[in-house]
Image (cartoon, rainbow, N blue to C red; front, side):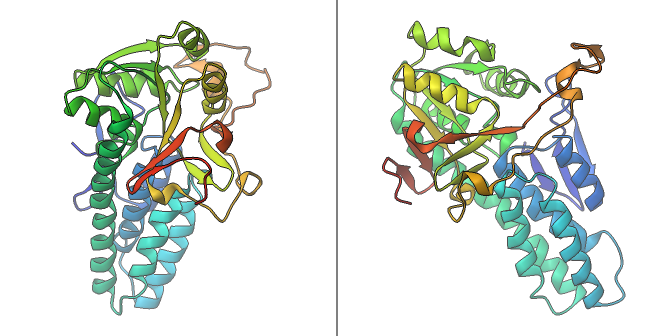
Length: 331
């Protein structure tokens, strides 16, 4: 089943419920979609690209319009709101802008709706295709018997289907290679333990869960051969990804473990550098609560960035649907 799809409105797997419950929810309005994005019911850069694309299509259907001008104004306003719901991940705005540009070329209400939905479906289909290409290309970097360390979730749930970094693991296993995966829990929302372990166990792929703090000892004991992570935005001088990626890259560099980044080309934002990107900060509740249980004093000060920046000097290679990019990164 795909992570996100269209059937009269947007349907998506609610990732906040996993692994306890597999639930598909409907987003019938742009407001509901934005809420789903903000609460991380849908997350992962490629999946957000599809969500942004479908969101523009949804905006064209969510109400009746008295004129084409009114409709286009609504689409422009909705697109702005959707794109701003997660500021660090570039793919969301890529999907929004692509469908909006096409939709605004329509000359009637029905034509705009048809164009927007057709283009959104193309975005989703292309994501599956490019992930398969990333997987096939990246699988060349995995040897039979390798132990792979991964972070956060970069599989089916982070994309429309297949995955980026986990897609590479899937492709290697599909080729008959024996692969063992170590998955970091990825605090504070445990997207590694909740989502990555769920996915890999469902696929019958060998996975072992570790705490984020265990990466150093894992590498020191030579229990892992390579690190594969995803990306939310790649700029001229580095990679923005889930908070903790930078720490993982430092540990990999110290222990001479190859550190690979897997991402579609739409994640490349090469007009920008680190200083141009706003890192999203999330609510304090994510750190001080686990469910309803209090983990810290209620009034403690909290700093909760969702992403961090890893310089390209720590990245062994970037794997895209068009090939592997090695240093020096002359994009």
